[in-house]
Length: 274
Image (cartoon, rainbow, N blue to C red; front, side, top):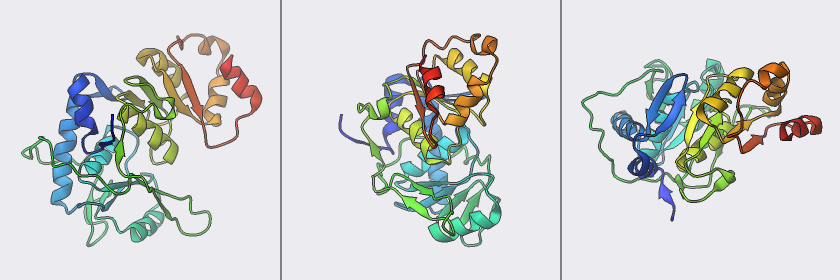
């Protein structure tokens, strides 16, 4: 299939598997049809606040369904999500907002940035807004992540890729309509991209608020996860569990384990392969 605008990707999958879970977070399940409708309504609320084509929208939300809804609502307006940590100190957040000049900051109190629209965590659009499809709009840039600020004030790393994806492309080896587990923070580029690419492929994405070694194994068994994104620190903590705990869970569904962000000791990688 050709590239599909991210303003249309949820509708594409909702038409194929409307009732299947798209997102799972701590007992909260959202189907593809629900996610598509809810982000249509949210996008209209963001548009009323001034979000336009190719604007940046700073998203400072913790891991959860709301983070994904904000990102897709932004894409549906042809704008670019710019994720940051929800726990970022205000002084550092201020620098990023100054650099990015977003039209909206999500996850901060109203009025936090005079002259810039702001909505708090837990913001819900007016239920009277339509949840029907919006006109197709494709952002010039898929995402605008932040640097770590190690060389001075933080910088924005703006993707040169447009906000579009081919649902048939097994990018990163992600299977079509599989199940991806993301136990890492979504404001980091790795978890963000693996989670979103899984959704672009029609996968159910299971996300945790924070990493817990045994909970990770439980979720793999419960949701028959086939792909997981990790970093070596997570792998070490799973391996440090007592053997009887590690052996308690059925992990036979797991086909792919990604590890990024740091070197992985050969012994640890071999242990996971075995």
